[in-house]
Image (cartoon, rainbow, N blue to C red; front, side, top):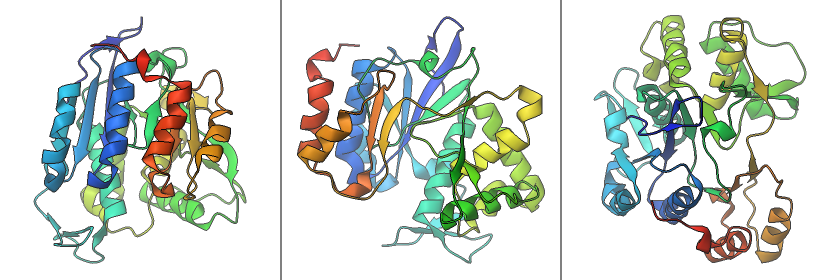
Length: 305
């Protein structure tokens, strides 16, 4: 994958990567539409989907997206289990690789293969509502790390597990702090060169290839792994820049939003926000979502590329 355009005055290359699948097709189509309306002209947008969904997503190629199969991101020793959202890693058959873990492996592999300077990882349930470019996210021409200090509390058991696993996989001593930083954001800005160094570290610590190392984990977050690596391994080397805002109004709760809730949500849009994320798992109706977003980002703002 390659970034097709150098964006901003600093001439850094930029790519957008979106993992998706058939159930999120309508959301992904809206994402692509909004990227055309508000993104930099000619930016590479790679959408990674299961082989069975390639035909359905092919139409998005007419909008300048590149559709790639998840199969191309995984080695032959990863075998899909028929009828299940799981894979079997023949090098480490147990436990089977759940779809959630496989998706994170595919996301890491997608970014690691990019030859862009920076990759914006944008899930299907994100929609752009204002003009943006790579420069919208850079700080002094550097890709910052999203880090929210003390946001993970002792009651957030899964987040603490993700943090513990990340430290172990990187060969680092775990944290003793009661509160920990949160690195999970929508969207995420990653540097492919950093991801490649991260995966080399994971493989070296585990003594196996990085995909096998991750696939045998039951609890794992790719965003936490990336954050811990940049903060605790690479910080001195690269002069880390931190941010607490990714310019996206986000709702990760799996609670259905009606028209009134959506209107109230979008009323909180900050002047610097360039995107909105309403979790696909919320079950929010597509028509209600479209109507609410159209009120703040009318489709008449679309442009021809």
